[in-house]
Amino acid sequence: MTAAAHAPARRGRVGRADVYVIAGYALAAVVLYSGLWRHLDRGYLVASMQDQNLFEWLFAAQARALLDGRNPLYSELQNAPLGVNLMANTALPALAIPLAPVTLALGPTATWTIVLTGGLAGTATAWYWLFSRHVVRSRSAAALGGLFCGFAPPVISHAGAHPNFAATFLIPVIGIWLIRLPAARSPVRHGVGLGVLGALQVLIGEEILLIAVLTVAPYALWYAITRRRLPRPVVGGGVTAALVSGALVAYPLWLQFAGPQSYRGIDHLPAGNPLAAFVSHASQSLGALVTGGPGGLALNGTEENAFFGWGLVVLAVVLAVRLRDEPAARIAATAGGIGAALSLGTQITVDGRPTGIPGPWLLLDRVPLVESVLESRMALACVPAIGCLIAIATQRVLDLPRDRRIGPVPVRAAWVAALVVALLPIVPMPYQTVLRAPTPAFYAGGEWARWVEPGGTLVPVPLPEPLHAEPLRWQVDAGMGFALPQGYFVGPAGEAQRGAYGAPKRPSALLLDGVAATGQVPPITAADRARMHEDLRFWKAQAVVLTERPHQEQLQAALTALLGPGRRAADAWVWDVRPLTR
Figure 1 (cartoon, rainbow, N blue to C red):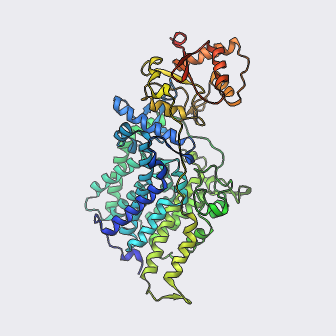
Figure 2 (figure 1 turned 30 degrees about the vertical axis):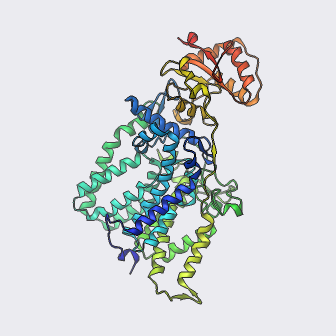
């Protein structure tokens, strides 16, 4: 008899073992982010590159919007004067809005830390709950599966920069509600709850929901066809869930796809996983200390979407074959296999070199919405699949008599050895955390308010962009009292209105970027000054500000040539441009 057949439904009962498991997950997550927890004011994850600045700004912008009684899904504080569509920018409103009091009281770094830590621990807990209530009887087996789901290499890679992929705890909760739907006493009421969960997941992370649907849909379709007639509770509850979810997300999705500063998909280069990525080790894992890490097999450290290592790949394949008589294992293996195959991209590569063999993603590459997904991320579906296989296999081993052997080796000892070989190399290491440089006193001390009227536009030099997003933090520390031109976000660009990172740069921004990068001041002409004045009027700028940074003298010389002498204010040089832009 299968493990799932033995598993009783223990709804709502929390035992001592559950508490220990959940506490263990929380402790593991806190250890990974220990650097942030020690420095909730200035801690910065090195792995996040500029993304921590972005997400902290998103949390702060939504909190400030609530405080001011404005729409929290749209902001005019970046990309002045056009603004930013937050629904089109992974703003996580379903988490950012409830945590707004934390953001306002303790700052967005505290919110960032809570979301990441709670995301990992919560995801592990939710999968543990699904496994322990609907797949296996053993708490130990379920705990091991949940641990893998919450802390697997692809999850850890994203959890250094992308909270929308770290906080995926609603996916298994939705799975639990789907499992319970056929036996629901009130299908309509159950459908309402399922619809609310689906809407909340849309407002946390649409992409992971899309990945789940794409990888589970083939099995679900096959199941529906072979059953020919679905149970009435499934139909009634499913229709109710669709209606409720659709109603709740109608406005947010309209804003995302048709509202101001919406865009029509994002173009990107082919980003499939090389085959070698599956058997290599992630940069944040113990195995990387021996093997040296990904070795150029991923776009960057936050997109290591496979990297399970040889031991785990072999174990997963063996388990998929050996457990094929188990319904839950078949579903997991099918979904994981589909995700792995799609993640290979439009052309299969071995170690980054094309083979000329078309990849399965070619079938979806032009499908609206799907086309914007980085195909390598489809391998995230392998994580719960492998976690489920590990949980079921552990249950089966525990069900065997203690004296059962494979040759001279006890089965339990052999299974523990196999787990050590497969899982030890992928154990994650704590994230490296540094202290960010203090915010310039001009912003932190409130001097900016003498130069910019409430809501007016302040132009920091060089202007903020995806590779230089520190001014977003300065704006937060200044109380979000002014708007910034350009910034770090995704918005429409060009006649096709395709999504692009950051705003299209205006001529004066390009000139100042060149000085900041090279330290060379080009000859400033009357045409340059005219373009600078035009750009300032477009931005509706009130002040141009230069704080201490490399090549500061050259930037000051360029600004003096463009705008005349600046004035010293606190630790900054300021050019009052209101006479030019009014």
